Structure formats: structure tokens, C-alpha cells
Image (cartoon, rainbow, N blue to C red; front, side, top):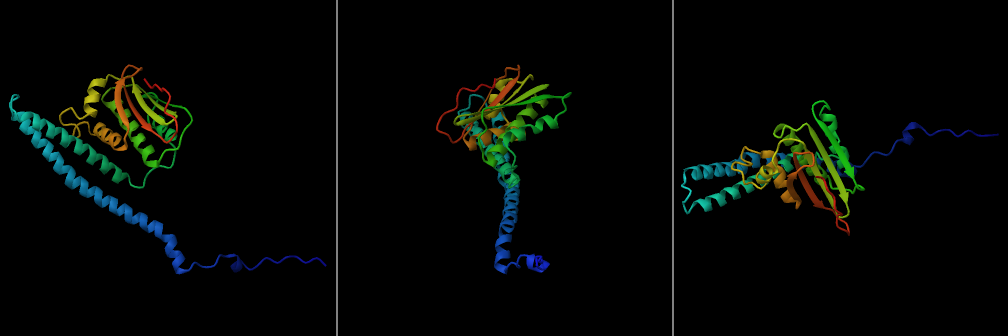
Length: 257
């Protein structure tokens, strides 16, 4: 006679309850993330309300002194050096503040997919935006992907708002040993002016003026990237970022015009 297997009672299929120690271990990562997020918010508030405001006030005081100082004064060169130092410090502080605010909200998607968001964000009849990816993609850390996305976002904003561009092309080139990101537009921006802004040579940069460009310049410096502005093959400005990635070979000549 054939016997039919009888399924075990439902309670026998349930996993045994977790011991208190196991529950604590499983909940620990979430608890640590909450503590870390709280600490990031606290540091961001202190940075914004404290050091950034103090450095900004120092930079404005230096600007006022320079405005009243004769051009031939022997102290003028020292004050101009101090102004450049405060502008550089302010860029670094703003970049650190942005990093703290980003916290753990770094995207899991790859950089090409992140860049294609711009095409969905901007209607084609208002802005013709393209994304070109060349070379085999290489894995990038989440913070690197987010930083490059922010560079692209600021460049697109600058091209449309200040350069009055109607066409923007974002070019991402993967090479051997390096990655290049280029944002080119057909606007009326001037590369020479943009270079001065990026280098902090325009009075007030980062202190209420050109904050976005100052932030990406500070971020590029912190990350060890090369950042430059040139004339675009579209007729406007091309902002280019070059960063090294692990690899035995150097990047082959990639142009993003």
C-alpha cells in the first residue's frame, strides 16, 4: 500500500525565534546608520552656522578693506593673498557641507544612467540635451559617481541659465586608467571667464557669487581631479573633468571638445 507523505504542521515550517543577541546583531547596522545620519546633520548645521559664516565674514571684511585701499599701498598684495585664501577655504567648507548633507543618500545606479536623468528632466523643446558614453564602463565608487553627477548638474545649470545655451552634450569617456567627463554647450559663455571663476580669481567667488562653480572646483581639488574650461566644439563652453581610475595603463587620447 502506498503511503502519502503528510506535510508537517505549519508551526514546524517557521524558523525558530531569534535569540536576543541575534536580534541585537541584526538591528545594529540600522541603528548605526541612524546615529551616523544624526551626526552628519549635526556637523552640517555647525559647519553652516559657524565656520562658513565666519570665513564669509572675513572675506567680506577683506573686500571692504581692499575697496578703500590705494592701489599703490604695500599692504594691498598681502590683502589680496588673504582674500584668495579665504575664498579657497570657503570653497572647501562648502564642498564639505555638501558631502555631509549627501550622507548615505548615494545612488546605487551607474553613472551613465544617472547622467541620462537630464534627458528626462529637460523637455526637448526647451533644451536639446544629449548623453554620449564611449569605452567600456569601469566601476566607480558611489561618492565618485555622485560627485561627477553634481559636476554635470552644475555645468548644465550654468550653461542654460548664464550661457543661454539651447544645446548641451554630456560626454563620458572610459579609457584605460582614467575617466573623462565633459559638458559642452552652444551658449555664449566665455571659457576665460569661467577659468577665472573656477580658480577663485573673480572677487566674491564662493561668497554669494558663483557658488555652484566654486563648489565643483573645491570638490575636484579634494578628489584629486583635473578640472578645466575650454571652448566647446558646439561654440560655447566645455567644462572637462579627468580622473584616474585603477588600471595598469593610462588613458588613450579622448577628446570631448
